[in-house]
Image (cartoon, rainbow, N blue to C red):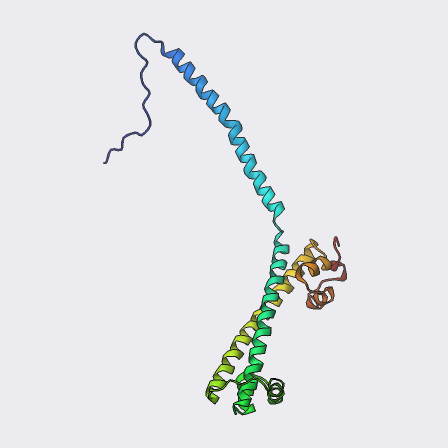
Length: 209
């Protein structure tokens, strides 16, 4: 067995001729004084932590509001990405048509109809990427179509989540549909369409119902 020395400081014996009882009394009073002075400080620190917690909770937006506000920003970002990808896709379609790629091949690569390919080719007739083979045109169209499909799927998933969040908030009565519309930049009519079929009654769209 390994011996571990006691780490606690040993009490020194009182020098000869000094009564130990008064020394113990003085020590007890000193300890009591330290405890009394530390107690208000500890209580104040605890109160400060609690107040800070309350302040943070009061200062930050509630959970539902934060989610709805974040979804507004995320939706704007997705819409911007979709617009950019659509523009690039349309230019690539027109360039492929101008480069001699058959409309049927372009339609197969992009998921568009042949009539849409021809219409896009005419609308973006100034788009032309010289030096690309037909295979390179098709490969670029496939890549753009995949990127666009990914963003569209993200959008659909986000709309399902928004629908669930809106239904939860309306059922809880925390906000009415007009407050939600202000937070999400989605019109009240669109929110009603979004929540159709969820079993919400008309009263649920009014605050305090």
